[in-house]
Image 1 (cartoon, rainbow, N blue to C red):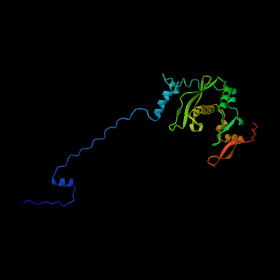
Image 2 (tube, rainbow, N blue to C red; image 1 turned 90 degrees about the vertical axis):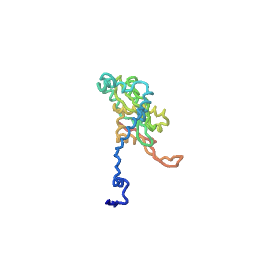
Image 3 (tube, helix red, strand yellow; image 1 turned 180 degrees about the vertical axis):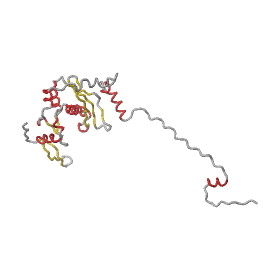
Image 4 (cartoon, helix red, strand yellow; image 1 turned 135 degrees about the horizontal axis):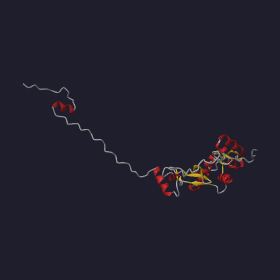
Length: 244
């Protein structure tokens, strides 16, 4: 006599019903891992693109071009570096005190600086007109935003490496890219001059501000278009050079 068996779980899932009814389960197949993504393009992008573009544009050797060959890396570029100190006479000319009458000022930010011509005159006085050269070693390049152009320079004195620096300038401040490129020489001269002790007072905020306050003062001006007021730095109408 057969016995009728009923399911006590009327809402069982289809899987459990299949198991209860004796239907064999399908074998579980582990999904295969995702296929390896294709390698990214090896073509230049971003910074690499700019480097490739700069490489195509440049004329002459970069410092890195000289760092090659038979374990002699850097010996051409830094040949005779720091092997002979400057004479006391030259050092005195380079490190002479800044003359207040030579100072210029940024009217908005209030920092003082020397003109490019002043640095060149100091170097001419110390090394002679043909005894030094500020050599550009890279082409002009720009930041990713295009707002700043820059270039690397090396200061060579009597056929010896002395210093290196990046000269950069804001396109908006200069008014055009061409004008900004011309200003890069000035920025580089200021930085390589620092290694020689030139205008060292201007790198010290306290001494720099003391010199600034002798010749310049802040005044309120009115913007003719907007009618708003702002403070700017201007030269004093009457000022007296300090006695050194």
